[in-house]
Length: 338
Ligand code: TXA
Ligand code: MG
Image (cartoon, rainbow, N blue to C red):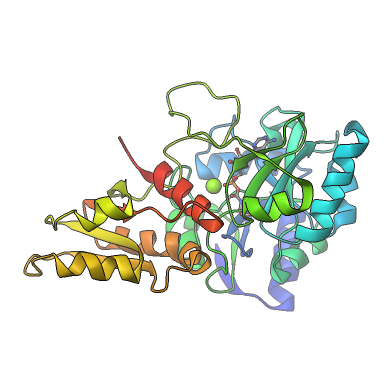
C-alpha cells in the first residue's frame, strides 16, 4: 500500500487502480472515503470485505458532475415534482455534503446498494475527489474509510491505522474540512426524510424544498432495520462514551481515567470552577466560541485523539440541537455504548 501526496501523477495512478478494480482511499470535504469503481461488483465486494461491513449496509456513489446522475440513477422513475426538487437541491447544494437517495439504474450492481433498488448519490465538494472520479469511470462508490463501526477518518493517518495494508493506495491531502459525514436525504417516498444528519443542515434543505421529516432514529444493533446505516454502534470510540446535557456535565465531578469533552469554552469554564483539579484527567472542547461548524470539524479528530490517551470513559456534552449540532449529537449518541 502506498500513501501518496496529491499530484497529477498520483491522481492518475489512483484512477488507474480504480479502473482495474482496486481500492483507493481519498479525501473529500467530509471524511476520507474508501473508493471502488461503482460499476464493478468485484471491486465493491472487496470494499465490504476490507471494512468488515455487513452486506445489508449500502454504499454512497460519488459523482463529479450533476450530469453524471444519468449514469447511475433512473430519474424517470421519479414523479415530476420530486424530480424538480432533486434539481433544486442539486443546483444549490451540490457539490457538497449531501447524499440523495434515488432510484438506481441497472448499471449499478446490487451489491453496491445492498440489494435495494435505490442508491445514495453524492457530488463531493473536493477537487481531488472530483478529479479522481472523473479520471476513472465517473462513478466511485465510497464508504468512509474506516473499519465498520469505528470512527470515521478525517486524516490519511486514520485510514492507515484502520485499513493500512488491506487497500491499494491512500491519497493524502491533510485533514478534511467538514470532519463529519454527509447528510443522507431520501426523496423517493411521499415523505422526504433525513436518514442521517450530517454536513448539510436540515435548515438548508428546508429553505429550498420545504419541510423534511427526521427519519434518523437510532436502531438497536440486534434488531432488524428497514433503513440501513442507523446502527447504534456506528462511530464509536474505544472508550465508553456518555452524552450529557449542558446542565448534567456542569454537575459531573472528575473521575479517574475519564475524559471530559465540552462543546464550548463557556461551559468548560463554569465546570472548571467547581472541580478539584488535583485529579488527573483529560479535558477537551470542540469550539471555544460554541460554533457548531468548528465543533463538527473537530469531533472525530478529537475522539480519535482521545482514543490514543487510553481513557476508559468519555463524558461528552451535547451540542445545541440545530444546524450542524444535530449531526454532532447524532454521532455522539451513536458512539454511546450501553
Ligand atoms: O460524507 C460521506 O457521506 C462519506 C464520504 C466518504 O463521502 N461517506 C460515508 O459513507 O459516510 P458510509 O458508507 O460510511 O455511509 C453511507 C450511509 C449509510 O448510513 C448507509 O446506510 C446510507 O448511507 N445509505 C446508502 N445507500 C442507501 C440507500 N439506498 N438507502 C438508505 N440508506 C442508504
Ligand atoms: Mg461510515
